[in-house]
Length: 598
Image 1 (cartoon, rainbow, N blue to C red):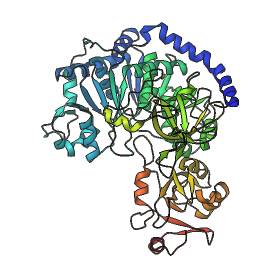
Image 2: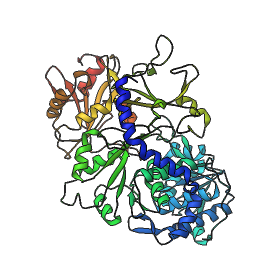
Image 3: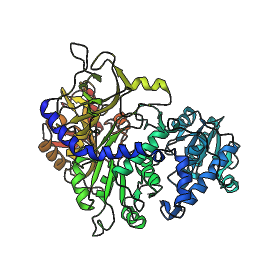
Image 4: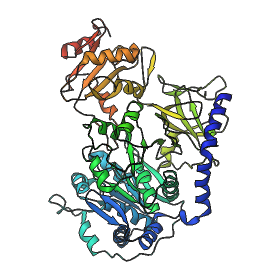
């Protein structure tokens, strides 16, 4: 780190250190704050039985009722032979039952494998099998998804909501009836340590099938407690996270801090932009836990005089893009926004504790040496090594792959994936000195002189065209401000006979059916160098996203720019005429034949 960077970093550390030291001191001085979730379930039910713990749409659940529900699931699972260390697949939509099933795993010392209920077919079979579970808890939606593939899940006992499809399936057991018969009495808690595995959280599976990442009780509890202190969560707060609970963010940043504090956690089965403000008022929400794309959906709703009619004091999340940050905060009157960066399977935690616009945060004071940005060659997909064989660290402002050191002195342990073999793909050795070991995040970030980090792109998304690297998220930030545009997804596509990948943008117009490609081109020409301007445009009514609201760019790349495979309107940038032209089968044939200059 250069002297000027050290100076600015030192200033920020001086500001942040007292508060973070107070959090560390509180956690280390009071052992009762760090207890596995099963103990906290029981204690909260005894201490604050009538206080509201959960709000899901029109449903409210007190801490006592929540604990009773946890106990029902605990007795049910124990009657089916589930013991400490066993894996239980939980495949449910957001609901109190989801969190009750999770709490039962905590009391038993079992491992809850949280399954994405949006998966289908082969991917769905894979995630159920790879957990190693012999039992699965599913709701009605999950039962409907599993019905067609239940024959491929022999060896897994499925407890679900019976319907006309599953009622005659011998692999299904009637979950609702079993719960009604189960006891609500307090079970004997398993002998659990904070180092025991609590959950499997699956990666998104953007490259291959999803893999289960390990989450120990310590991470769930210590993370919840420390975030509660950082967000200053009080018992009368309500945290709202309308994103899937099988995703680590909703569970760790939404539910855990509220639950450990005795505050309320609110959610809904599916995110709804039109119901957002209604939920804020109905649940008296004070903290909103988001993923960035939700904020863009909210900005697409019609402005209203009621946009600020709520009690929000904090929005905390991951992935809020700089192009809407200020407008989002201003429109909804949110006093503070704290963006962040982390990976479920990783040992990186960046928090934008001071709300610097556009930044995903910085590491805690005195831990900056645990993170490095290493120069990355987009064309080869490899990290760059110098003449001495070591990786080359990026300068201030230069994008590079974020690496996090794995060692006994690391502030966060690296637990990685349940399958140890998968961890090798995430690690790299002999980086900056012989024998050192780092985690590869697979993400490009840049750093300023005060050690604030800014997300640039995912390595798989960045592409090279005309000899230049194109960071898709940076291009999206600029294209999203084009007139008449709600959102864009930028990706690289192969063009026969051309080196690298050409830029293509899927554009969602602000008003359905109204898109002016020439105005879009004029905006791109004003904001972007020629090599970064999209060569192809695909106009669609909405984004194709995962359950975690990530764009499915691999799917878009596979479809390319072929009008024979794509029903959406397609356009080609014609630099000779200076405009976008319709990309019809004839133009497509010219591109493939190499007779049209690109």
